[in-house]
Length: 408
Image: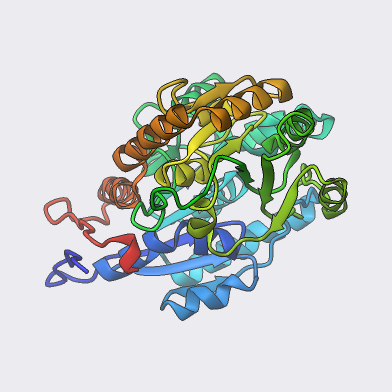
């Protein structure tokens, strides 16, 4: 598999703990990173709330430990207990580095790492989440409190904050949440471009399948996608609008399953639910749409669609515009604009040459910027840097991963 293994003649490499808000996230987004770390000789432990994907992680040889956590909880006592349990895990396992993913786990792992005296801490925040992106009263009320906690947790010696796009870096600086030298920009979680590859020529049989794949949240623009389908249905009845994904029960912005079924019964969309084989699905469609209302980190679904060589329609919003440059490798539309989505979809479905040109350019950008191997190596570089600053690394013997995610 081409892994450059570390030389352990001067002792083993340190332990690393990865903490996320679901076992599904760890399996789908960070499995390749964890396997690469293990093959390099690091002792890796993955921690998340319990779920069915914990068994999948164990099946590929990774150590996984469940930790009770309620993503939607606002109960101060319950949150203090969660922090206490996480501190106990860190004290018991004694990692040299803890890395938290998504905003809540990033904050909590940084806080617990300080209390447990973990030498090095890394936090990855992939988009600003409900609290910082939503206009709802609950989000506005939580924003000052969360911002205060973040200012205390996210910083200090031997700490790195990983963000996915320059817009998020600028916003975090406005909130006073970054320190000079402590921020790294890594564009996404990585796409295996050997799995996500274009379909064979002429295998799709016409430009009439338009897909939105994401968690079923209002902020992803699913309501606007449905309205665009309503606009086009009377004049372009041959275009099929597909939605892949399931409601995110732990998110206050979740779209209920009943609403998805109602849209499907209306005949305006086809709801596919959870799709296990996304590369195969993407190779059957012609246009991929992600009309995110608030922006993302770097949307993985959009990067996967780009790697598949699809024509892309997304919003001119943070993260989304890092994947798509308007009229170069996709089309950008204003957020919350159903008519603009409909116009862009109609244009791509009626212009084969434009659709193919944009898809080819999207594939080229995915290979250049979002390939999983490059993302893993950038993340390992952050680990090496912060571990050396903490006195736990070996700067003269950097561990470099040369493993293809498809081999993992």
